[in-house]
Length: 134
Picture 1 (spheres, rainbow, N blue to C red):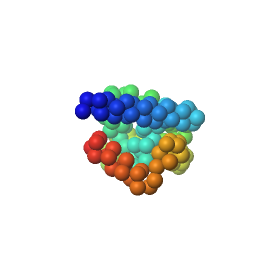
Picture 2: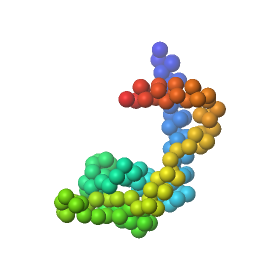
Picture 3: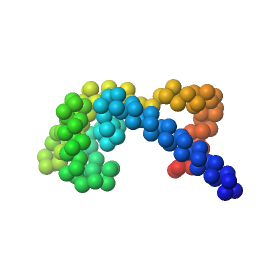
Picture 4: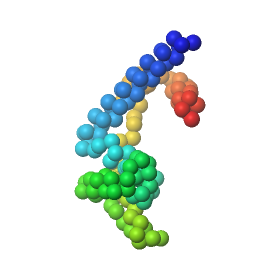
């Protein structure tokens, strides 16, 4: 049993490292950092208060200012006052930010080994991963 888990741990380590390298390469190509890219993805669901972005990263709200400044300077997001409470600042994607999020979406072609799996095998793999990490 221990040998099988070790093999699985090794395989997962290889997969995660490959995904991390691909992610970082893709971010560097568009001059983003992991925190700015993750924030863009969070914002794709809609505007978020800066405090919720801070909670996601488990950082102080003041530290989110750097992320917001970087996204605003690139024209990818804007800070706006909340219509419900003007003291709360919302971070909202711009059209350019939405377009970049779409560009950053993972594609199966970035992982050639996955592309070799049949549709049934890809579905099985996705189902197993969801079950294992739920």
